[in-house]
Length: 141
Image (cartoon, rainbow, N blue to C red; front, side, top):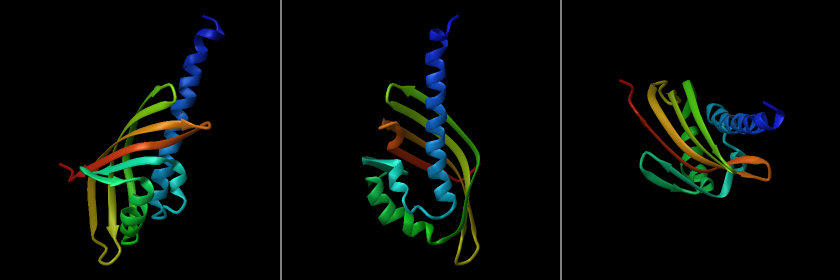
């Protein structure tokens, strides 16, 4: 085996790592309860769906749904996070599975859910950006 044989695997591995980092940046913002500036993680023509609802672009989702919702939370944390990534040229297809816990600020009540997110990311000017994302959740069994 020569370097040419291993080069595609190395490039794919680096792309997979970069996609995972892109998703982690966004998830970390959610956990910090501050999504200011996160629109830079998404394409301008992004599409967001949540639990069967079309939320529009990320900018719309952030302004009208996510940011107001996060203001109601005392904390948000992910656990048991797993992600599968498939790279095809300048596109990445991902499936994230996780549990999450939310503590509501007004009464300290806790909400626990099992979640799943499927996303398509596009490599734009060397950066992996989320283009389409659909997440859903349910009560854990």
